Image 1 (cartoon, one colour):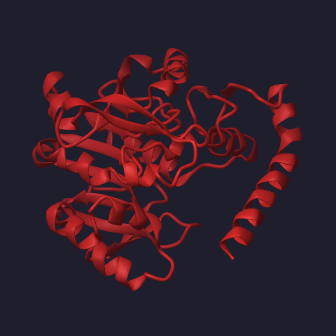
Image 2 (image 1 turned 90 degrees about the vertical axis):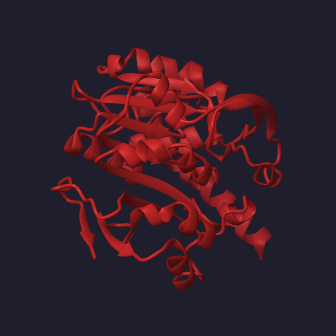
Length: 309
């Protein structure tokens, strides 16, 4: 059954690519552009057109006029909250960090462990109207800075690159390299920044708990923050962070919300990650958390976003 499902997805992908190819050619003059104009983006996004993730999530989204939930979070909350610091942890090609025009007071810092993406990221930074507000850090974000560690590059789908060996074991063709490690707290101390208002996004293929442990000081001192955190329960189990431990050691400091439906910007409050996962054990393996400082919500949310208690 798994083989049939995989074959079906491959066929579906081929059909989609064939259907979208004429639209790509019409918009860019080539089937394999390396510079993409995305909807609601202030500047171009440079990509490797051979990367399946770049093709599906950036190039094809640009011709379908799709606006992903993580990009919308980033643009809307940066605009509404005007944070001192905005942290994009797991930048990939930068479709979030390069989307807004930043208010003068905002410093946006993007962290990406994969050095192969930086030639593209630096081009996007060069062409962005708020380039002076944006800083890029090539490092794996961990609980604390330290020696170089193993990192596994997914050469087919860049978004699947990971620091977790057990996850990489399931990825054919993963390439192991050594990367520097940093923590959010250490980087902000080095830059002499302690944000009063903070917006952050974390998407690091199972390494999210380690990232959050390494920004405890920043989160504790911030008066107001909101974050958008990817959750994949399969990855959490592999990394020794089942939902009950994640709740107990990290998430109990936050108010947690999940998207009510994929077609809305309504988010429902949940008591804990563990209770949510138990209630949706049959279908919810991969989803996002919208988080706020415990008992501290923004005075107003971006237009179209709403919270339900």
